[in-house]
Length: 535
Image 1 (tube, helix red, strand yellow):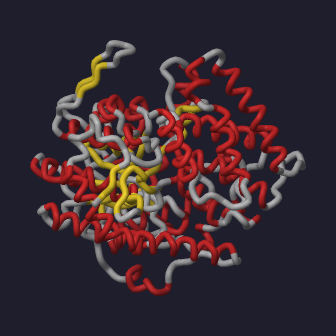
Image 2 (cartoon, rainbow, N blue to C red; image 1 turned 135 degrees about the horizontal axis):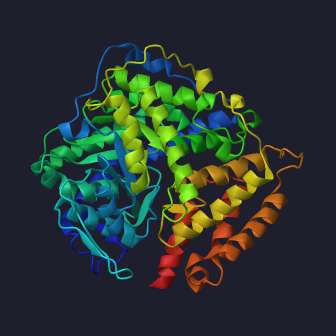
């Protein structure tokens, strides 16, 4: 039997015995393969640490060179020109569905802090949205939130394979967060979605190989059989957000060909993955994170290969997130932010992407205009094959051509954003607007992994100073004081923001001898401690 340590009080409509039994069966069926694949990641990383490199797989050449396409997607997924993303709290779900975007990706992963309440109440919120009964009355403002007549199409991102859900154990082992999120959502909603002309449609994050995609495909097929829904009802868009997956795009689409809804250019995690993978290699040092643009050669190679690969297989190619957040209080910044969003989406639409992501409702009209200008009345541009694109392994790894410098300002920004984001995450908010940019776990990962690499490979600032642990700690102290000055006398910040805990955790993942694979793993342990102290 599954053992539940998280509270059920007030959550019983979600955590029914039947739903938990479905998750338990998923864990028993697929948990061992998940563990094997995570072990495989460690072995592959050791090869890189020993001087190895990445290349297209010789054993899957036939898949890359043969002629095949993925199964067509249902009509509601044909036009995805603008998608909005965000966490699953009730107000956010309503605002996102009402934003005017074609689709909303409800996020249980990078834009979400995995408190028990967040994970379970988020499931309830999505079911209420599907049933069109969702509402929210804001006690602070008195404003009422209701769902519009024609909301966005719903997609859901479960957690990656690496993340556990420690509030539920099966056979003495925590359930995979991915199977918990996917299982609850599918069990509760698959039938009701199909009755309404939609389906259980997902985004799949953090894959590192086609074998991990194969596992997801088997999860989908098994679930369809257990739920009594037609094969292929489940559709998934895979985020190509690891450098490993960039070399296996064809293979990932092949494994999911009956369930594929395309690929997405998960740009921020992709940069993090490159730093993490080659963290001990000085030839893979990147400049300040805000200097790494989508026009950098290695990023251009990645996005152009993604469009070419998708369209060659009849699949949608989805663009990435622009981090700029519009401001309704600062007209000058608002104009600048929207100009940046427009330029980013203009490039993506011109490159052949079929749609893109935004993080704020005010960005939706801007992104929509850029894609409307290219698509017109067409639902997508899958027919644009990009046959002129020729990307090699060397192109994907051409980090040295990235323009920019390592500066004190960039190092300060990494420390500041890392501390502020972790603070936000520990108090239950996984998407935080910081200095005009939307920060989530992916962008915070870039900040702390970049610092780790700079320290451990002996990088220097542009003024010649070495990036040392002592320098990082000094700047982190100064940045924490800056944050405190900006917050002022906000008692809530000091009681709930946990600035010292956040600073300590940032330094742990940025300066430790051993690289933490994901900051969300030690942060989750701290989150559980804090939750236990509040009960």
